[in-house]
Image (cartoon, rainbow, N blue to C red):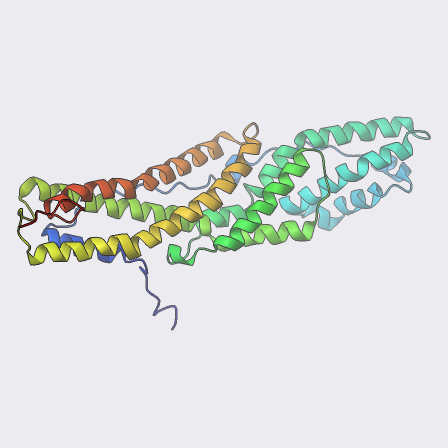
Amino acid sequence: MLCGCADPDPYELGDYLTRLSRVLETEIPAVDQRQVPQMPRVRDVRFESTAVGVDILEFLRLGECELQQWIAERNSSLGRLATDSQRLVYELNFLRLADVCIQTLASDHPSLAGDLRKVADQKQQMLPRLIWQSILAGPEFRDYWSHRHQHWSDLNETTVSDALIYLDQQVSRWLAGHFEVSGEKLELALSVLRTGDGGTLLHGWREVASRLTQANLMIDTRLLSRPLCYKGMVTPRREVLQRVVTRFTGKVQEGINQLSESRYEQISQIQQLESRFLDVEPELYRRFRHSRDALLESAATTPRSHVESLRPLLTQCELLPGSRTEA
């Protein structure tokens, strides 16, 4: 019941457009909405993994190496069904324990130590792709970009930003050769992304761009047809316009500011994370990233263009400071 009573437009952007249409005596024009970019399909961005490992007979000779435990888990039935993020945890622990094991084996089993070094080197070369696939192409980020709240006022700014900061810090450490990992913390951070803030941001900015473009077209149409106000005349229409514009600079602008803050926090953090994988990201994901950023960049300029569109109208109605003619 509470959800049913929720305001679908708490920042009154649609109401602002309707009121502007009335005062301008101009129909709200139809505009083509920009397509919201979609994440590519899983199969189109999945890397083919190269099987590397330790021969089972040689594995038995690892003796007291702690690495033996992790290899056993990977080869278990549960290990074979592990998700990408769980596999990432395994590979990081393998790399973390491999150096210690190699040193232990070096004196008595130099050949095995050499083989283990080759396996570790191969795994480290594959690590950037595995991290990318486990995090940026994982199911949690897919939910982040595809799901959305009823309205952008429901954005989970602090929680999602904290999770993104944590993930970026961990990825930076792993790529630098520090392989310590907490599987529990990793899964918790990823689970936060399922809230769908990314989809909410993209659809929110598309809505802002679409509605303010409609508003600009209405203003242009009215200015080209006949004046809304006449010099030196204080009319009811002038007062109505002032109230309508005050609505834009109040509630509407408050909502746009929230979108801007979330875009700066969340999208900037995601772009920072993505920048660490530019050499390994698939082409289809690169296209998605470019289309997404182009939408956000274009939409973010729309509020400024709307303010510029309002300026001649406000000047005509003597609502700008210094524009009113004194008797």
